[in-house]
Image (cartoon, rainbow, N blue to C red):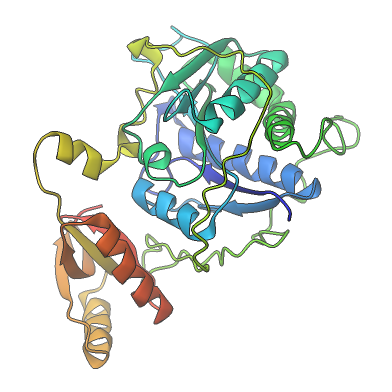
Length: 343
């Protein structure tokens, strides 16, 4: 059975991630993620993506999408940021626990990127990030240099292809698929032309349908539930060490926080709804309400600034909301789990 990797381009849509002189993290993340995915696909790995365009997909949604598909590893690509520009430089990987197989992959990625030219800032444990906490498979969030450090941006731009190959090589090495990446990097025979064209390639089941109403802010992904929790028995020892320096501890990942976990820590009760549409025109929202009523699905319209959200359900438990969401998806609706009627 071929190995399966889920690649997650951090942020997206209205969530720009870190921004530095107009440079937005969400674009760097997506470009690098798609490049890594193409290399892995060419090496026989089944690659799925949480997003393939500039759309917003909530962190909890990403984790549930991954769990529905099942995979050997979940790899989230990000850029780091520090409070003061040009203060820190290097690559850092975040994991849920140091004794998790994800930490082995994280160490391998850091080592490969160090060879490209980044400083290795080590591995940091983050238990509050949804994509690390909620995924059933080993997960790594990679901070590929600081977006507000000029030298890291220069390295990212000038050695982009090598960076993609380095991360792909680390994944393949951890999987035991390969010791050398097929088609090793060469400026002469490799270019970014002909990159990812919307097809997930080797057996991917993501349908790429992220349009929801008039604004394209929704997400939809279909896939059969496999309930896989593959924990690869990797033997390669990791070099990276756990770091606790809060100055560069993935500080710009506030939007990736697991909201249910955070509110539980504060003793507050989260309420979840299922969003079925987001519209500029209230008439379109009303049309969806009528369609839902015909299918005996109660729903409401909530004003969110200049747009109208159609939501259904009221859940105290996120797993219960996810189960109901899957029923709605099977009926053909595009859905997104939201908290308290908000993203």
